[in-house]
Image 1: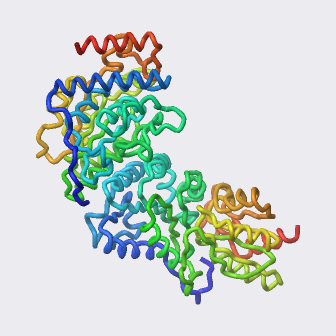
Image 2: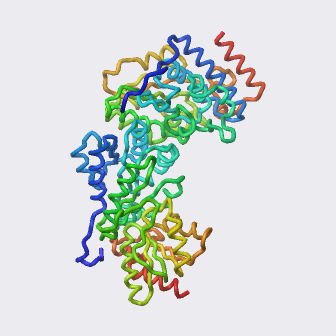
Image 3: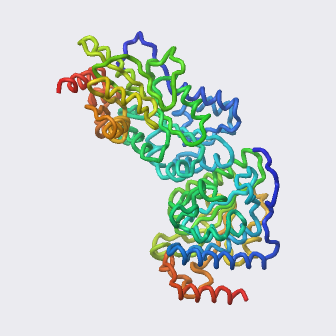
Length: 285
Length: 316
């Protein structure tokens, strides 16, 4: 558990405006990445984008020049199907060239349809099958706790995947160990692949359930940069793991995609890409 | 067990647990991860000496394997120790995605495999574990035959980078590699007897059975070569090729289902490289109720059963 060399590990954004700019660039990058590949999960990419922007822009201490730096913060994207936005965030942080995004899901690309730590710099564990990220993140945070190390573990799970029982095993154990070095974001866009979460296998009241498991919980607007940032920075002297239920909108930022289950993995046409880009740019202008 | 009382019997689980403690004294990265299995994995001594480094997640195998992957990511060297049916069955997808596909440096130790839970029945028997683990990409699979092999296999697992599956027997067995140095070589079969008539390929608890069968065969003029194939993956191709060329048939013997197991592995390799006449002995179906000795009789996993299979193979 030796201390590594600290170089360029500080997050690049210092203001909310910087993070908002980064979020726009992630959405535009993911949109192009999906359009070029002809596949992806744009709805979930856009619901999680602002969480990624806050983390990669303003929170995570990682070193793109040394992705295995032992004292780096860990980030686990349990909803591995949102790979296009994750890869874009990694590219913008400097883990690999942005130009490589054009290879997404192509033959022999390092950027597969789901993240692979053995190929992609900056990926901590392979995800794709749901309900895997949180247990692994609990193991990471347990490791830091055992070692007395100061690095933090952050994990994003989709709301639909909370239906997987493995998450509840991990929720129990994280609270049992008092892992206050662990932060869970639930990307609460209320839609799973086929329909709404509440009509499929209801999750509400989700924050109360997680709190009952022994976590410190809050509910924030998952597209409000300041609110997300503040929730992460809240004091940790309670000795409990932290869950932030982030209310989000699937397809956020593109009116014809928002809140539609169909955009879980629908690929936009060339014309739709132009419309989406214009709307995203317009909203930021 | 039916072994004669004068044969000293030894405990692989104790050898596993003691070796883990010795390794942990020298390597502070080593942690034990378990599922309320401190007793059944013999981890009481480890807990006493390293209370902080025993990670007991409770009865939750999916979380157990995921947590182990995370601990490896954090720089630790986790040995997951749990009853093999629940480790390999309940957490198969975690083993696939979090450990093997992710290349996590985690050692998976399946305790009490095969039919060792006897009367508790097929829910608790772990006869499918080898087949399930063998299907995973390039995961080393080791089934030690005795405490000497167990000690060296555990030490090897700690040294080698990447995931390993170790299958640790529950009940006491005679030593088959006493005085043999080294007792275990990864990826290599140990030839325990010479013979050119038939080859008996066995691992784990079945090595002793194969040796006793070879004794019975010798009495009837059949010279059997016994191979202790402790490593199921990667398989010792050279030993199998020689057996196929130099003897008239091969009988595989294992305490698991041969389809996908040691027998399946040997048959797949030989079918493509040196077709041989074979019999694959193992547990072919969910067991009836009975103790271990009774179940071995039912599945012909006895010296007589193995010898009969060899005679039958040579006679047809």
